[in-house]
Length: 284
Image (tube, rainbow, N blue to C red; front, side, top):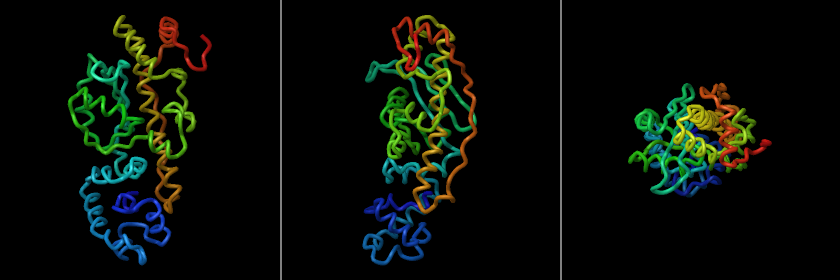
């Protein structure tokens, strides 16, 4: 999709990009062959930037595009990096600032799931993440990434698609769980639980070392990352369908993956009762 993209160029917004497409300038090759579009004043100044874009894509410099594309257009990176994508989600102790810390992280790459737990293997997460080129998250720009960078003292330079902005632009609201519902994604035995309950599960694990609390926490966390892949591909395809490339660049729906962790219903009911937590849609 990047080869058909012009909205990262100086002075080119959605309207000019659409005008180029409508007039048959469908790719960078078209642009360079035709010198842009007659009557397009800004096009005369853009040849060098288009050549620069060709070079950046050829060399795999995707940060070049991340830095220039509006956040809601980062979906265009996805087909180029989907085989090197890490879908990530963190859980925390519920605090922000210096008192806040990560309790668990899940990473899914379209094939396998890895879970990281504070006090066990959390330190391995950043090294594992370094093996990927693209991060896909939901609200990661505001939440997950700042937490990760502060916790581990690193600067993440991955290309990043934050689905919060992409899905909002497509009309999907209500946080990750609301977007899942909009795409028909079900959470099974985790239905009705939210991030606050993940905090309660961590607290229960920290106090009692109840393995079922930790297993349920990881089931919740992993379910989030398993949902990110179908949301990403579904949103990408919706975006492509609104371009001249509908029917040409869509991606196949991903295979559904089984969550390797199982939530324990007794633990969910016990923790909810002890902490006076109401599970959405459930009768307690």
